[in-house]
Image 1 (cartoon, helix red, strand yellow):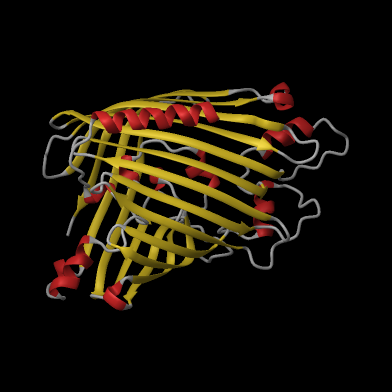
Image 2: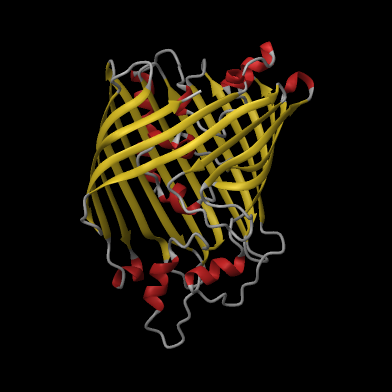
Length: 407
């Protein structure tokens, strides 16, 4: 893990030196936690409310591709990868709202937060205090976790790490208090539900035994985050610490360090995460452990305890000629079991890399034609390698994406 992190860090520093130019952002590339004021609200603070177009943004997030997988599934198909509808707007210069709904996600309600996985955002933000430096966000929102991979608009992120896809509770009911110390530095504290489903329902969904564990009376967590812009907004930081609880007397802790560089024709991010999970409710490492223990007469399937997850992910995008982009991404993830008589360090490894080409035919529109190759493997080490086969996926994809600002 250390060698991989050093390699990723070195590569990012090299590319930063090579492509050092003026920093720019495209609004569509940004998502939730990096923006404390939308472009709409910034304008309102200066001019006040007038017409409907200054009160609301209506966005559609679309991505569809013809995919040719090889591995666990060998069936080619035209897939709807992303389909989200979004409303962002302001009621007054101090009060704004955001709603985003996934059109290709189940609307089944979660029992704990009384929400559905199809809802990403359903929140309001209130700005207050001297120079409106304070902001309070209430409702369904994104986790304030230091991950540029997660914070990047999902239209443009083709494949995710297991950290984002499986480990994190990405969109959650929460109360977030933020303070803009300067125009370049923001601090956030977010009180949130640890998981969107309750303790009993989570065990029931997997068929696992609680094995003496009890639900926490306060299954809540707290994120503390810092977002910074430095060197004329060429270097963006997103660092966070999280403490949470799922089972009674079992505390989770996690640190996330996200660094991003943005120039005229090049952008890239390096995210590093480490999480100590007291009870493996994300259920990433537990299935392999249960498969190993299944031969024991006293076997009872349950979640592993005292597990550590680490992730390093690097992405780089380069516009090598006008309208043409190279995109690359690589990640390395490990799971370690540190309990007494555990399965040891790095008993599971998840490795992936992606290389692709994008073409932006219309300069004024956030539409791209793309193609990429993606490889992913999950490997098992130590005792778990005896009964768990390594898994591989090869995927070739060609398609179109479009971030449509309809109003």
